[in-house]
Length: 155
Image (cartoon, rainbow, N blue to C red; front, side, top):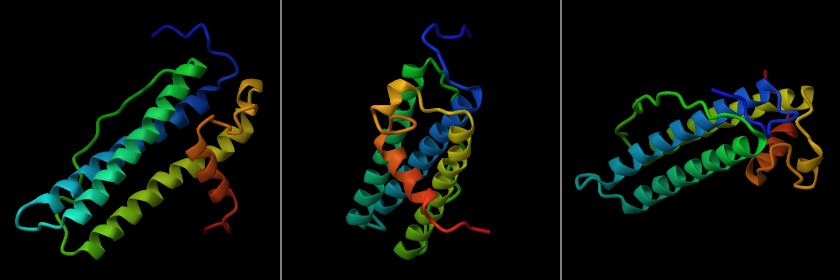
């Protein structure tokens, strides 16, 4: 594929990291949709849980869409990967479903945390982005990475 003519000061490592994040967000959305379906089944019938996971799926998709728009603005190219079917299609309890969701969020946040050093090392902050206050121009990612950067280091 031809390089975008608007691409400037956008390192390949940044583009690759953003694509990883997009794929993680979409995989999480897929898994949340699976949990939404499970809690909607007539023999489970927990509509509050179903709505919660539907909202989670929607939020993850929105995150991916924001990053896709950012890639386009910077002249990057989207690289979607195959999304595997969720490994969890049912749970024994709401508590277990919440634990699964927490683990998934940790995985998604880990990818965001791994992008911090990339952004700092290749100086993702362009003059156009400084006015937007986020090194990726996405409010949600700016907040997430700020929170991650201020957490105690994990071993």
